[in-house]
Image (cartoon, rainbow, N blue to C red; front, top):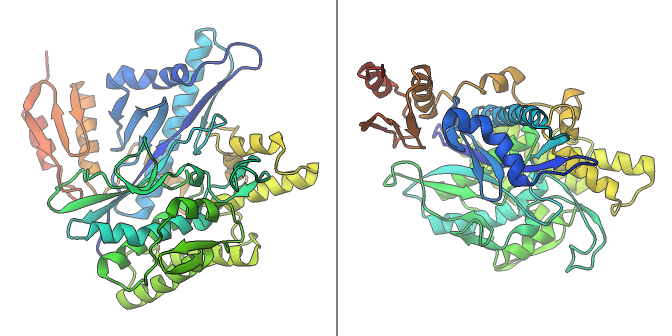
Length: 463
């Protein structure tokens, strides 16, 4: 099987300014400093950058980076890592500008999903589907998988007392940061109510041929292995559903209750209600893994990471079964963080209600170089990588080669070299001084730059 799929990841970041004595800037003020250099060269806080990805300021002063269209998981990992590098550069520039303006303190930028005020921000997955897919059947079949998937790829969270169950529970550790903020199973909204799957039909491609699956229930992951499992397992699920591969009737009537129950049960054994009976998150994932193995055995691997995805899937399930995370605590987000926090608890005799653990939880996600705890673990070799770090550095300026992102990047590079004002979105590119010359890219797999070359060959630079 070699049916390529387009992947994309949108990451919203939390921002904070800290000064121990002076005034602390609001998130809106911090965001203005972060995006000042972006606005200076892009004339907007919503731009596409040189690797074909999108950088913008989202609702609530959340910086957001959307990877370029990627046709392999390796491309996705590299493009996503490039986004973090761009954010680190913006942090450094913002702090320099603030200090020049007499504002001391530090800027923190968190790749997580919740702040201390109870707000949540997202990590949204995108998967390109063929329009022929029966979308309602697909989403119904996918919801139980996504509800139970957090035991594989959750980011981990220190949960304060009173959150679960029903506002009476003790402080504890949970699989997911995002689960407690989910309000619906499937919906066209992303802000009024946070669903597991957003059904708004915006394919950013030829709508007669494609549809985009927009999953907004995922946690903001830091580990490349967690990303590999998150996208690799979900892609296999989609391929099974699209092909009609038998998955059994696992319809889930109350997914919001189920996703919370699964998140707060580290044993993975809490029963989750199905339309016909009940199953735990662990049982559901064991079932889907068995079906995935059979599917791959019958149809073959669709990319060279499939065996690695299946092996990692089984290893995480075994860790949950045995309650021994030592085999995954250098690769899977929730286990990496749990090891760090458990070690700290043991050294200092703390329970989960300690504010120091909540502070460590937050510091784990800080992207600032030298401050973020995950970054420290990565640099010390206590977190394993999937791709060569050099690939991530190249992705800072180079787009994925197998999608139209390469064409978009070529257009942006040519326009900036010649200092020509331009406008770009996911499907179109144009020079502002030549509005009749619009390049339309409705096929996300089209990598031909011929139209770009012809456009610029016919343009006379302004005097």
